[in-house]
Amino acid sequence: MSPEPAEPFATYEDVEKRWHVLTAAERETAAILLEDATQIIVDTCPKWAEASERTIKAIVCAMVIRKMLVDDDHLGVTNSQQTAGSFSESFTYGNPMGDLYLTRAEKARLGVGVPHAFHLDMAETGGKR
Image (cartoon, rainbow, N blue to C red):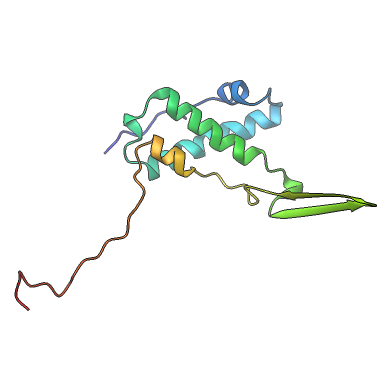
C-alpha cells in the first residue's frame, strides 16, 4: 500500500503558473480543491507513488483548473445558445457539473490500466462436466 501524502501534491502557486494569477478567494478555493484532487489520486490510482513528482503536480493542477473553470452561473448547463438578429452563438460545456475528475490520459500517466471485460466459466470443474 502506498503511503498517504502529508501535503497536497501541488500548491495554488503551481496552479497560477499553469493558468493565471488567482484572487484571494480563488486561492482559498484552489487550496481545498488541491487537497481533494490529491485524495482522489490516492484513492483511485494505486501506483501513484511510482509517477514522477512533476507528473502528479501537473495532473492535480489540471484537475483543479477544470473544476474552477465552471462558474456558479453555468453550473449544470450542458449547452447554451444565444441569438441576436441574424447572429447566433452556441456553447457546449465539457464539465457542466464542475466535477473534479481524472481523464483517461491522466489515469494512464498514473499507471491505472484501462479495465477490460473478461469471462469466467463458473461451471468449469477441472475439465469434467
